[in-house]
Image (cartoon, rainbow, N blue to C red; front, side):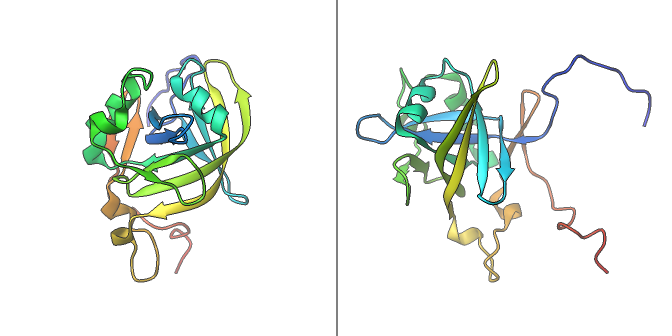
Length: 188
């Protein structure tokens, strides 16, 4: 590698997952979706995820009012609809209807999952941190729904078949081929 150029601190971590966050309870608070690229696993036990949401977003009130949200992992084929859900407001548009997504009840919480996404994480809000431009919602993952056709005979999720969507510096990507499993560098 060559000489490095030093930039001011910024959000250069890439790629990151791009997810559809489902919120609302379908009763007092209508279902909504928000596209989030600031998302990641925070802890294994209990299974915990964090999502970054701008405070002015409509979804903020839904997440804080219900105390639950879902993290739905879309496929690369869904990129245009996922992008749409990130640039229009749920105050004005029913994103489920506009995108042809099916709002399916979660198994343990009130927020909806997106039926068309191969993986959905059901999350109970545990903490909210104001970090500046974004609020960090920390949720405990209380259930995971996985597309049955993507689970192999050993009950493992086949991520390559899912063709999940990723995000890097303003661009969407599909995940490529697997280069190895965890620990492959030391296995004999």
